[in-house]
Each structure stands twice: as structure tokens, then as C-alpha cells.
Length: 405
Image (cartoon, rainbow, N blue to C red):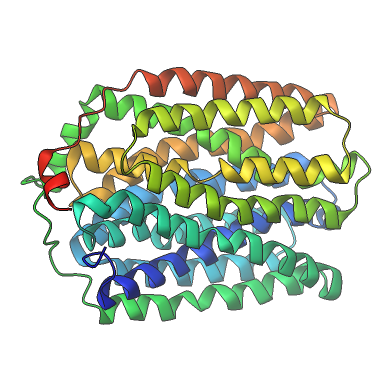
């Protein structure tokens, strides 16, 4: 473990995890704004859902581009641009109270998420970590970053209750600017230098991308990640409103998402740790199946504060554990040199699914007056992802990884 816990590695990990804390923490709180924002605009839920869907799509489109730039020019510079876009998007949402203002703000946030979010953080950490510890390291950055969802959601609800939704967005914009400090740490740690691990692919970025897009296993992995986007964004966007419609309080609704973040700390770390010695593809498959099982139980039981919190806990254990496993498989297939770009491409698929999860949930509700059909669509997609991930051919660990121990 001594190779893992160097002072430089520790600072890179914490700075990268802080980017995830802020970007995902604030983003997961947007579901709390659905009712107050739509009431202020005088629109149905589809307008808000469409803006959230566009944010996810732009996030996906920006991720491979920002990832390729980070692989070439360094994570710090690209993340700083993303932090500024993120903070500006929140300000636009707070000041322009219209569907257009909401959409433009969410598009800017999408650019910020793609440039300062999880794909950039994973690439920075992977390049600074030895191969035999990389799965654990990716789990750590996701796990630490998950604290943002637990911490930011109740704080955001406090801001909304105490100051109104517009001031709450302005305060969150101030929080987003704090990511510039993490960017400075990454820059000072000279994270722009070429990675020193032995398994760097001797390819250009263009060649690496072409190799990945012609890989059956990468396509299957990316297809499964599409389902992940549908599931978590539908839940993150619509669960608070679903619970409010069922007669539960706003506090229960916000805490149901907050405990997702809390239990995701355990789930992401466990996924990274288990992925260091177990089959990553099988773990991924069981993650998707487990989500579907918990969703079936949730919608079949009467909605109560207890079932809402228990659902948040169970989903949290399976929430972002897909990230270290998915990124870990990409490293197994292609090495760490172009992880930010190749994970970004896979994440684009994830975000297309996120677009569907956010928008279709609102569309179905406005059309049918219920989320029931959408819940069953999301459940069926999890069963599909279970099968897809089991079809992946996962290489056996190379002997040198064991020798490094």
C-alpha cells in the first residue's frame, strides 16, 4: 500500500474527489428545485425535465472532448474552465425565470460537469496510481466524491426553505467557484506530466478512440452504461416529486436522496475494492439487476417515510459503484493514458440515457398523471443491462499486477 499513499497521490486524490463532491452534489440537488421553479414559471413538469435532460446530454457531449483536452493539456486547466461555466450556469438559472433561462443555465452546467466532473477526476487519479491499486483508487475518488450528495442535498433544502430557491441557486454558485482551489492543487502537483505506469498504450488519441469504437466489449460496456444514465437521472430528478405527490414531506423527499449519497460512499468504495480481485463485468451486471429488484420492491410497497429512506439506502449501495467498475474495465482494455477521453465517450452514452430518464419521466407524468409507466421502463432497462454486461469478455489479470504486490 505504500506505493498508493504518497503525498502527491493523496493531494491529487483529494483535489479530484473535491471536484466530484461539488459537481455531483449540486447536480443531485436539482430535483429539489422542480416544484418551486415550475411554479414560478407557471409551466408543467416537462419544461424542467427537458432542461435537465439537455444538461445531461451536453454533459455527455462535453465529456469526451474535455477528456481528450485534459489528457493532452492537463486536468487542472480544463477543470478550471468547467468550474467557471458551472457557477455561471447556476447564476443564469437564478436570474432568468423562464424556460429559456432555465435551459441556457442547464446547458452551461452541462459544460461544467463535462469539464470539471467525474471523467476528468478519474483520469487524473488513474494516471497517478500503480496498476495493481487502480481499481481501489477509482473507487476511492468516487466514494469520497459521493459525500457531496449527502452533504449538499440537506444544505440545499435549508437554503430553499430559508432564503427561497433563487438565493439558494446563487449560494450554490458560490460553492461551485470553490472548485478553482482544487484546480490549483492539481496544477501545483504537476499532474500534467506524462503518466509513468508501465501499461500506457503506445497510441495517439485518434488511434486509441478508433481501437475502442471497434471493440465489441467496449461497445457492450458503453451500452450498459446507457442504462445507468436512465436509472439514476430519473430517480435523482423525479424521486423527490414522486414522494411529494404521495403525500410525504419535502424533508423526507430530500433525505431520501441524501442517504443515496451517504450509502454510495460505502457502495463505491466496495465496488472499487471488489473490482481489484473479482470480475468487474459480473459485479456490474449484479449492480444493474440489484437496482431493478429494489425498484420493484419500492413501487409495490405503500409510500411511507420508512420505505422512502430504505429505498434511498439500498439504491445508494448500488448508485455510482458502476463508475469505478466501468472505468476500471476501460483501463483493463486500453490502459490509463486515454482514460479521460475513453471514459468520456462511454459517459456520452450514459448521458443519452440520462436525457431519456429526465425528459421521459416528465413527459410521461404530464401525459398520464403518474410515474408508474416510467418506473417499469427503468426496471426493464436494468434487466437488459444485466444481460449486456454478462456478455463482455473480460481479460484475466496480467501476471505483472500480482508480482507488483
